[in-house]
Amino acid sequence: MTPDRRILTKTRAIFEERRRMSDSLQLQRQQALYAACPEIEPIDGALRTLGVEIARSVFEADSARRLAEIKARAAELRADRARLLQKAGLTEPKADACDACGDTGYLPDGGFCECFRKEYIRQTLAYLSDRLPAGTFENFKPQMFSSAEDPELGVSPRAAAETNARVMRTFAEKFDSSHENLYLMGPSSCGKSYLAAAAARRAAERGFSVEYQTAFNLCADFEAQRFGRGDEQTDAAVQAYFDCDLLVLDDLGCEMNSAFSGPAIYNLLSTRHTAGKSTVILSELSAAELSSRYMPQTAGRIRNDYTNLIFLGGMRRGD
Image (cartoon, rainbow, N blue to C red):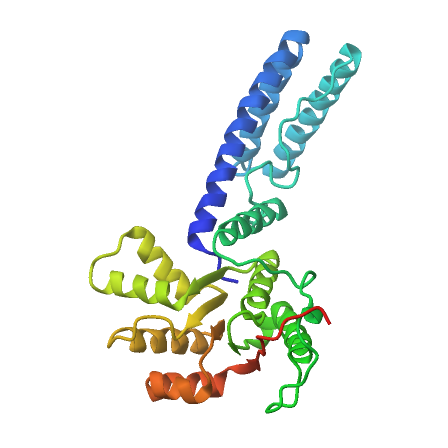
């Protein structure tokens, strides 16, 4: 997985604030505890001193014996502390929400705690909610499409929708191992964006970094960066297009057709494919239209490296 740097930074900031608040609350509770049972405060001081002595004992000649003595003394102090708490009818003050990481987001081995992963996923979904159209696999209704067969393709819009939903659900669960790319081709209102959004959400729920962008806006970001009209936000967006685990590129063919946009799109798709990163492209362009609009390398890349899903629409009814 390649975390989105912007979301990772935001998640870390959330945990830093959570840790700060936890430390403040812990100090308040500790002060209340010392006020209720003053005998505990010198014990805590002694335990802190023993902690320092443990570190120093490593360099002593008889370190094993000294370490055993320190641990025995620490056990006595903790037992005394527990008796004082019990006698006073008090409980140990605790402010951390997560026992595993102490609200730092990191485990002792340096890895991310599960609570950090969950917050990262929550922030990813919040970020995507402003970009993604509505769409979940659970709420997709193939029966909304007509069951009448297309005379040329010999399949109905409903059957195509059912097949495409199955393929995209499997893709969302396995793209990180299959490294598959998808090209969703069909007219407006045929379910492309809905299922692409469902796949993007599922990928984000699994902890992967996801970008959902229109070809028009993506090319605008590339041009702004290339010609010095962008800012830090633009630079971060462009980097994310290359780095994210899953890129959903909507409305391919609706971007400005310029001498810059074609090579930029090819470079992006080629770089992602070489890196084994999956891309989903949505477009109304057929294979022939791709070849006429884009440089041969781009059309060939999509034709050879992408699984094509044909969407049929225009005949929606509740039959």
